[in-house]
Length: 482
Image (tube, rainbow, N blue to C red; front, side, top):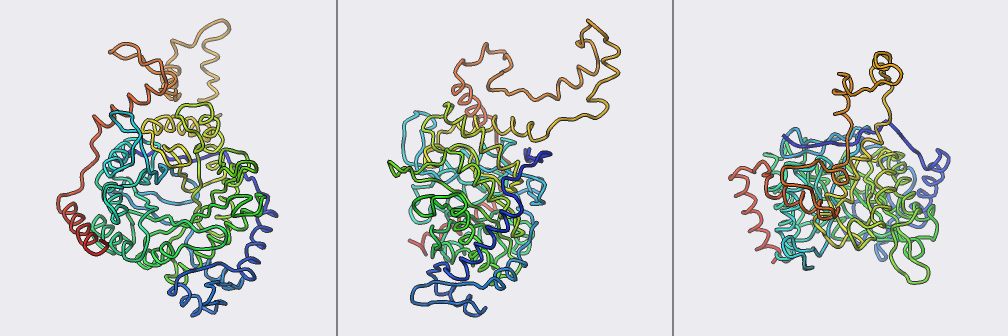
């Protein structure tokens, strides 16, 4: 059975008023109509021309009227299923539940055995998929690092390693370009069992990054059209950098990011009306003195939460970024500070999907035990987001009356039953075990838990028939793509 413990917040926070959301929507429509977005794809330009958009073939700039945008976005579904390999791993995007994924796609890791820093490989993808399959905090899996031992077909190998090592939904951010996308679709059909089942319960989805300011990536957007036609959910993430690739204000950054994401989602609806899409904006800031890429600041936290409201304003699910990424060391004060804000704000805002667990150094470095530390933060937030229960049994009036003044509650049945319901962080408050006291260092405890999972946990295997089919597809891709 899949281990899933998603967030179902009883608390909610809006960082934008309804008037502010409307102002950003109006500004976005103004940019789309008068400034436009660059689509360096002849196929995309033809689709836009066929639907009456203003297309400049020489500059690849597409300008979209407000009517075209709003009519296309009406086709996009608010709710759909992200399928797992097993039915109990399915994720329903219903507007009430927040699902967390790992972060991706890093290029280096600290070796699992030696701790030495090295480039990442396919086995790292597989190992972290196994850990994610075990952890209840992780509802879907981003391949956390790149399979650099497989050349041009590395993204497809990342997908295959993920399918083999978790029953949970997989989301790729690296299988780009129309030909690789076609192979990924074939892999999805093999895992789902048929093209029809894949449309109903797609076992993978795709995140495509836009290019700030106001541009699309050719390989990404052409892959997106392949996925949309096949029924694979496609999300678009804008990453405006305030002061560099976006105005030096959160509002301006949100307008630029919103225009990039919405223009791409419009294209998906023109290609395949009703195609499942999702919206994401992850802002950052350029340090004014060093030009450093900075994400661990309040402006970024607020933009991430505000972007959730913008997604829902368009009637589509939101993917939000959480957890800290600037820190170089796991378990550090800086990491804890950034996690405390981001991992709580975006579920409070109502994000449908959340990503960010497990990587450091601006999402480039895998420190394997970091995912265990992030898991504990997640479960603390899960309890916080539930709020407080004040029903009759929770108020415990009868128990208080039975105990009375100067008594104690240890002998009460109510205590024995309800005390077990209180979640206690296990890394900071470990239970004594038969092997003696746990390691004193928090990171060592996390490392020990990671090693235990990798030793003990075996994900439900793919059938040999499906594994062979995936190998056949990978071999064909290697011959085709080189």
